[in-house]
Structures are given as structure tokens and as C-alpha cells.
Length: 119
Image (cartoon, rainbow, N blue to C red; front, side, top):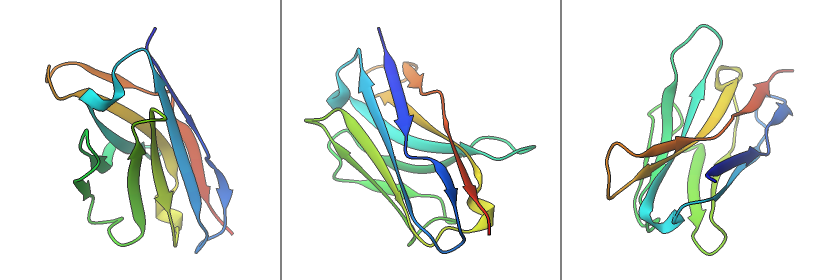
């Protein structure tokens, strides 16, 4: 059974930090490109950051460059999103996404974790 379980969300003040984790099971983690998406109320889901299957390459949305860092540990089947200098506009539900590098149409989603940035 495929599972992607996110954790680490919560309420933080502007300028603060959070670290999201996504632990996966049920598929071969090292064959998947991993990404974090987010969706704010009333807005479409947007791509935040992506890491390749090896973790050697990463990409970020312009809005989070220099503040967020995506990383993965293939031995632990886990992908992380370190979020620093958080802003109110980062408030959203954050989703973990796994996309197969072998079958482009094969992807999985986590259930999401809420991040709220407010004073």
C-alpha cells in the first residue's frame, strides 16, 4: 500500500522556521522525483520545490528561493522541506508529491500538512 505521510506543519510567527517531513512507503523511493506543493485558500496548488531521484539537483519557485531547502534521504525514504524566514504569504497546506522517473504518468500525493504564518 502506497503511503506518503507529511508532518512538521504548524503555527509559526513571521521570520520563523519549520521543517516538513514526508515519509513514504509502498514504492521504490529512489526511483521517484520528489516535490513539495502548496495550496492556499482560494488559490490553485503550486509547485514549491523539487528534487531529483538522487537528490543531486533541486529546483525552487521564485517565491521561496533562498528561504526554502528541499532534501531527501533515500535510506530513510524521506523527503524534507526546510523553511526559513517564513512570511504570511507562505500560509498554505503543503503536499508531498512523488512522480516516477520511469513512468511519467505515475504519481502519488500525501494528505497535506497545514502551515500557518501569523503573529
